[in-house]
Length: 156
Image (cartoon, rainbow, N blue to C red; front, side, top):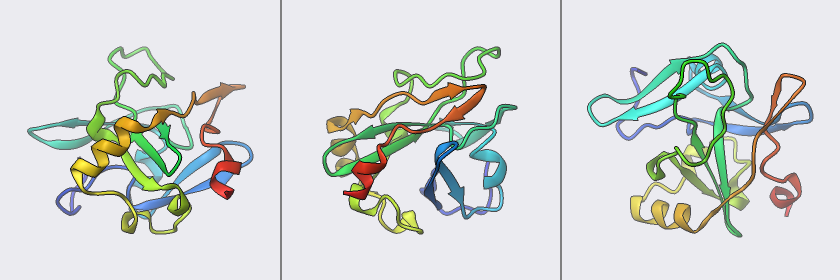
């Protein structure tokens, strides 16, 4: 569990997204623990303890699911797999609504995303419910590739 984080903290909110040719969208964290927690493992949430990290051994540019609407992009940390032998699983069905973090599409490339994240719970829920799954993260040659959000959409 992260320490010294503000109330309301959630994973994949302190940093920014960078597009790479090899891996697609990669999360660049501004947190000291980010080098490990956003690339090796998954995040879960429990009411009694808050957000917690489950380490993994497979590297990925980000362990997230994606949704998109005309005006918003949203991502959610993938919950830890229920079966210990699952290495790569990018299923949308098990990502709870409150895991999602939306931002206006025009702000997706901000260096400090924490300033543009939709934080109001009702607005966030409305955006997430109206957004569509953006596609599947893929694995090519045993490398996780996160090309789900189309670069041309972001450029527009």
